Image (tube, rainbow, N blue to C red; front, side):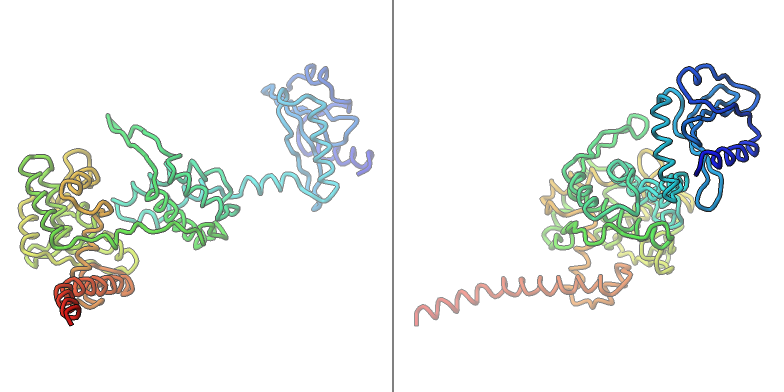
Length: 438
C-alpha cells in the first residue's frame, strides 16, 4: 500500500479503536522509554514503516504491534512482542516480514490462529480421557490406560500435532518405551510408589492404546489420520503359553502352600482359583460386586457396562460357576450389593494381583510368559481339546465373535496332534526296531 493510503487506513482504524494516538515518528528506544501510559491505550506509529507501532496500555504494559488489512479488507492488529524482549530495530524487522507476507496476500493472524488451533497429541489424549468411549471402559482398565497415557504417550508425543504424526514417530516412541527411556519412579499416594520400567510389553500396549485413541478421534472428526497404521508391535505370545494338567496341579498345590504359610492373602488366592476354574477375565472377578452374584442359579451375571464384550454388544455376560467356585464365593465376607466380593486389604479397589502372581508363577514353576490372562487361554484350549466347538468356547468365555474362539480350536488341534505323536512314539520305536531286524 502507498504511504498516503496506508496512513489514511491507519487513521480510520485508530478512530475505531477508541484509543489515543500520537503523531508519527520513527520508533526508537528513547521514544519507547519516554512514552508513558494514559487513561486509554496509546499508540505511537512509526514514520518509516506504515503499520508498525508501539502500544502502551493504561497498566503501563508496552508492546510492539503491526496494523494491517487482510485480503478480505478486514482490519487486523498483530502483536509482535513485548517491549524488552526485542529492541525497536528487531521489532521493526519482524514487522517488515509481516508486511511482506500481507503484500503477498497472506494473513499472519489467521495463520497463527490456525497453528494454535491445530490439535496436539496431548490434547487428543485429554479429549479421549473425557469421552464417553473412555468412561464406558471397565473401572479396572481406566487407571491402566491413564498410566500408559501419562507415563509413556504424553511425554514422548504430547507436543506433536496430531494430524502431522507419522508412523515413524510411533515406531520411535515404541522403541523408547521398550528401551526404558520413559522409566521413572513416582509417588502415587501416601507412601505409595509406582515404578515405571517400560519394556516391550508396555511399548506394545501403549501403541495399541494410541491406535484405539486415533480410531476414536477419526470417528469424532478430530483427526484425519491414524499414524499407527502399519506399525508392527508384535504379540505377547500368551495365547501360546498355556497350562497343561500338570501345570494346573502345580498351580493349585503352590497356592495351598503359600496360603497356609500366610504368604498370600486368602482373597487373592480365591480370585486366582476362580479365574483358573471359569476362564473369566481378571477384571470380571477383581471388580465383581455382590449384586452380580446369582447364588440360586450358581452363576455370575455381569451387566453390559461391566464386561469388555458387553460394552460393544450391549448384552450381559453369564459366567456359570462350578461347585468349588460357588463355595469360594460363599466363603467371602458378605457386603451390600455395591461392595466388592473380593475386597482389597487397602484402598478402594479393585484388587491387584500383579505382585503375588509373579511370586506364585515362579514357585509353581509355571511358564515365564504366562500371565493371569493366560489362565483364561489355558481353559479355552483345554475346553477345545475336549472336543468343544468354537461356538461353545465363544459362549463359555464371552467372546465377541466366533473368530476369536476359532483360534483356540486351531491351537487345540495342533496340541492334539502333538499328543498323538507322543503317544505313538513307543509303537513307532518298536516298529523301527522290527524293521532293523529284517
